[in-house]
Image 1 (tube, one colour):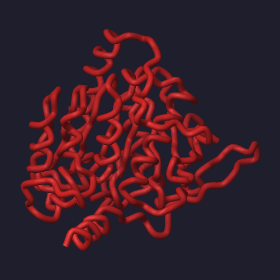
Image 2: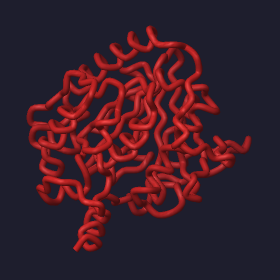
Image 3: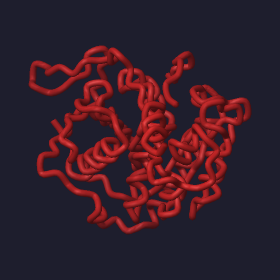
Length: 298
């Protein structure tokens, strides 16, 4: 029963767009570009080697006066090609740098999607942010959308001086999306209900009241379990795939970013190290809202 249920949960979790919405090619100077995505001189494309043996694609969207960086883990039915317009808008409205990536098996990333691979993926991206951009923990906010809340809380539970966390339509666990279980089983995936207890920074939870894929109760329970609770946003009438289209979304998110900017100023400026549980790969190399995007995540 356990194997059957975990397989069902895993199939629910991963729906990479097929075919991908972009291709990775080399420009004339040898740099990587995403064919199918509008060029942006302040967007850098990276190919990263993960501990799981895969090569994943990540993009860094630079804002000229940003103090904070957002590490964004997207939902299950999207890739970077579909998300780029949102990133442009978030960079502009929030005045932050944005780092995002495609999970193994998504977009131009190699390998197959799995829970453990998403953990390897986000660790490789975090290591790139440290090595290539000098991003410190206190200046980093990790953002997880739906299934992306899994790798987000995996990382957040291990970085003890992290700036902040945003959980957008997040899940308590994979199995709890399918069944109203009251305990955590060993075969469950993305056990966010357990990992949120180990997060030591402010947590903002955003969830739609009419979410028919991940019930509002998931967001409310995650907020209750957070050690440092920031005022949550329960989007009245919001579903699972459209919260970005509500005006209160960007207003509340901007308010949170501004609060985290003030908080980061009071923290030490010394470069912070990651916990030893996050392995650094010696091969890690950094080579307007879409209002009608259907089912970007789940």
